[in-house]
Length: 141
Image (spheres, rainbow, N blue to C red):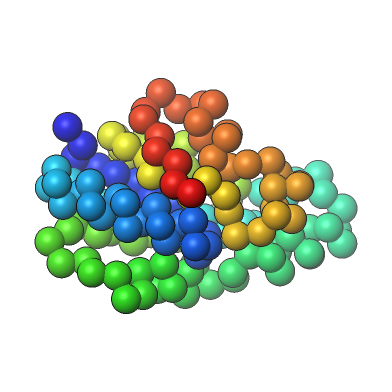
């Protein structure tokens, strides 16, 4: 039923819970789990004023590999095919592109991200993904 499961992560506790849930589903269906961290770029911040853009960039971990490592720390990965990726851009758009390009069957993501400041400026990434994809999305609290 699910061959590829996408788990977007920003390093938050919600993302970590999403990964744990995706790993359980992945084991059950022998699915590949793709853990994706999207690094916010200045271009992705678009119209924001320079000072606001600087604050936003500081809210995001500048090292995507460190975010992936933090998300998988002390997580049992035995019996699951896990692929980790870091991509630059605007999170919702990159996630939606990944869903299409990888033929994702299920997206498992945190209900909220790492910062409330990000939500103030950009809205909820999970809401945007839900609104734009036809694939099943499981939100984890």
